[in-house]
Image (cartoon, rainbow, N blue to C red; front, side):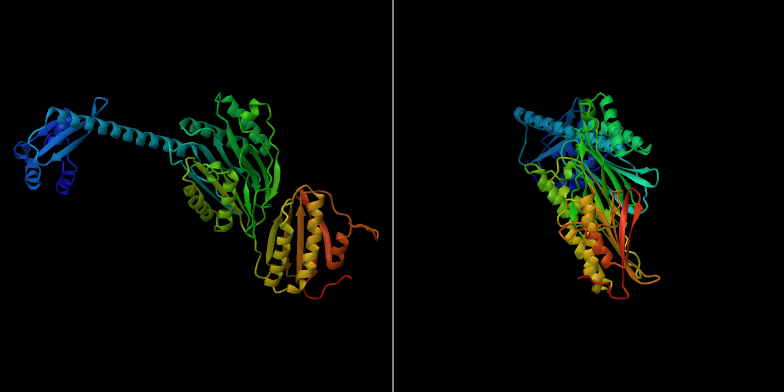
Length: 491
């Protein structure tokens, strides 16, 4: 054999199998043909004679590719300086054709199975994501690079009563069509329970019971949250799954402590269908990222390294949900060379900068975040400088610190800080600190030796007005600063 290309025969690359050429005849009859005179072969097959006269070969072996008693293709080998084929050489060619046929059949079967599996996976995932008001959502799914490219990971976005939205990512155990089939059933069941308006803990408890009743040995992990984009309230539950990652408006990221239960299915088997609910606040402009473990796990490394890589990618990524989802896919999924499938959901609450005449900033301070208070003070000072009122920074920063410390010490969660300009009837700054406690603060009169109880006294001395308002499932303490004149100082 020469091993050279035969571009001269490219005109015959597409030919009907009608026996007019020696290779098609070999395929149709499933019999090999060994030609030691290409001139004689050209006489027998006129369509090929012109090409045979132009190529510099002396012999050829036309071999059918047969697998499971069916001809699935053909192979032709051209030789130089050959006048005969010995029995051993004929057997070698036939053996080579058999090996090629088996390899080709496996490749065809693999492509068919992969096409079926990816089609099944696509059918099990939502065909469309509902439009939402007050934010944007982006979802991505990546199949594994190995195996059948199908698994049990899924995402979903569910329209809920009272203009809320349910978001979920989950992972059924296994990487096969059975896992995908179970995932589809579980996704639809969870969507139905959520759509009925049940609280998140009930949704996962019923989903766990449903999975257990499928009589399968598979379990599933899941992260589910109900989000009110108007107020920013988030009610989150998880079942053995990775918790959410939040990117704050100042670019910081954090993993809030979302309490969890056992994976779905196992929770029912062990009679522990308790999924404690965690309340979070998503302020305008913040982003919530949910994913399955394929995005943070790399073989041979701890998952904490992958979580830190995800947090870094979120911090450095673009603001828009779709662009951030693409950024994370490019940076992490391809980086890991993932043998696992990945489901990713990015939700961003619409920013609320106010207007040119009445600007506004929002910031969430987590109870367990030691940097939150200092970051909040810096954000307030920077905003006042940008708004042309740097002279108010010291008073506003001090009052905000007192209100935030009260909220963080005397409640069981974080606090939402809002500062805005009120242009009418008198231009002034209003500061809000919202928490989830229904207990209103009381202004006390501490003794000279007391170390606490002076917070509201300071706020009263610094601000022109202050008060407390009920806000949904909590309260908001506010205070105002007159931007038209100097503020009172305290000694």
